[in-house]
Length: 539
Ligand code: ATP
Image (tube, rainbow, N blue to C red):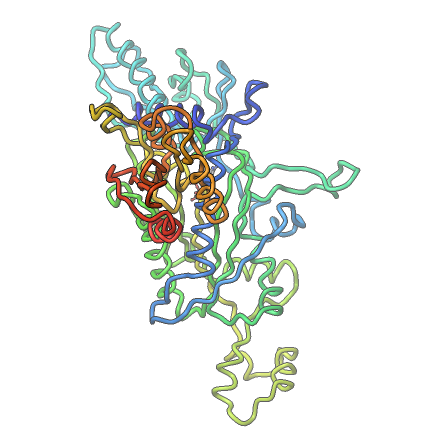
C-alpha cells in the first residue's frame, strides 16, 4: 500500500472508531491540538503504563548485572520562570520561522527546502516545500513541472534541493522562491527567531512580574527537584528520576497528524551518574530504549537509532542518539525519542542560577576510603564546609543521561504499525477482506471480548459472569450484537487480541473458545482458566 494511502486510512480509522479526534472539532478545530477518544485514551494509557512499569518499577538490569534505582516524579506544569532562564529556554528556545505574505501561513524556515535553480525551469524560479511532508513535496514538483512544460522543458524532481535557511536572508534569491502554498514568487519573508514557549500570567495582574511559561519539556522539573529527591529518598548515584507529563510548544508549523502537536506528552528519564561512568550509562540507555520499542511490536526495519555526528553534538555532550521510526507520511525516518548525554550542563546551570548547591557527596566512597574515621555527624559537617580540602574528592556534579520519549509520537507509531489489511473467513467459511489492528496485547485498548453465541439457553448468564470476573483485571468488552463473524470483525478493527465465545458446549461442560486475532486459531479451554490464560497471553 502506498504510504500516503496508509496514513489516510489510519487517520480515518482513528476518527471512525474513536481513537483520536480533532480538538474542539464542533468549532472547526484548532491547529496542533488533538483529543484521544475512548479507545485512544486506553491505548495511550497502556503505552504510558508499559513505560512506567518497564523503566521505573522494573527496569532492566544495569550494564554489570546490577539493579537500577529509579524513582518517579510529577511536577507542576507552570514553574518559577527562573527555571526557564537557567535552562536557556527563555532566551534560546527558538526556531527560525518565516511567513508567507500571500497565504498568511507561517513555516519553520529550517524545515523548508527549495529546488535549486534548474536551467530547464522557465522562468528560473525555485519551488519551496516542507521537508518530510509528501503532499507538500508533490505540490512543489507539480508547480515546477508545469513551469518547465510551459517553457517546453522537462522538470525532474531528482534535482537537488537546499535548505531555505541557506538563502532566506538574500532578498534577490528570495524573490525567486515560490512558497509551498502559493503560485507566485517572492512572498516568503526572511527567517526570524520565534520563541516556542506558551506564555501566561500567574495571578490577577497581567504584567511582566507575573509572566509564566507552560513547560516545553518535563525534564527541567526533574533537575529543579534533584536536591529534594536526594535529600528525601535513599537514592544514591547512579539513579534515575522519571516523569510522564504534558509539554507545550507553540510549534510554527504543526503537522503530520499528532506527530508535531502544540500540546503533547513526554516520558522522560534523567539518569544521574558519576562522570567517569557516563559513557557506559549512555550506551546502556541507548540500547535499552531501542529494545523497548521492539518488545512492543515495532518492526526492526522501521526502527532506526541515529547517532548524531560530532558536529551535531552539543559542546557538553559525548553522544546523542535519536531513535527514529519510518512513519507513512515521510520516506525518511523521524524522531520518536532522543537519548542524550547531557554532561553536568543542567545541574550546573541550576546551581549557578539558584545559588543552591546541587553537588552530590558520595558517602559510600567516603566511608570506604576513610574507614574508622567517618561518622555521620562528621560527614554532615564536611558537607556544610566547602573549605575542607579532602571533600572535593568525594563531591561532584553528576552527569546526566536523558532518554526523552514522546507518548503521542509512539502512540502514532503503534497505530501505523498495527494497521493491517488481510483476509479472514466469514461465518460461512468464505474468505473476505479484513481490517485488523495488530496491537501488541500489552498495548491493545481492549484485551478481550466476551460473546454469548445466542441471547438465550443460559449463555448470557455464563457470559455475564465471565465478563464480571475479567473486568476486575482487564479492559474487556461484552458483545452480544449480531452474528459472531460480525462481532469478530468489529473487534479486529479495534485490535482486540482475544475473543471468548460462550456456546452450547459451555452449558454442558464449562468450556469456552478463545480465538487469537492474528492466527485466527480457536481453542477450547475451561471457563475457570480464562483469567490465568489471559494473564499469560497478555504479559
Ligand atoms: P523535533 O526535532 O522533532 O522537534 P525535538 O528534538 O525538539 O523534536 P525533544 O526536545 O528531544 O524533541 O523532545 C523529546 C521528545 O518529545 C521527542 O523525541 C518527541 O517524541 C516529543 N516531541 C517533541 N516535540 C513534539 C511535538 N511538537 N509534538 C509531539 N511530540 C513532540
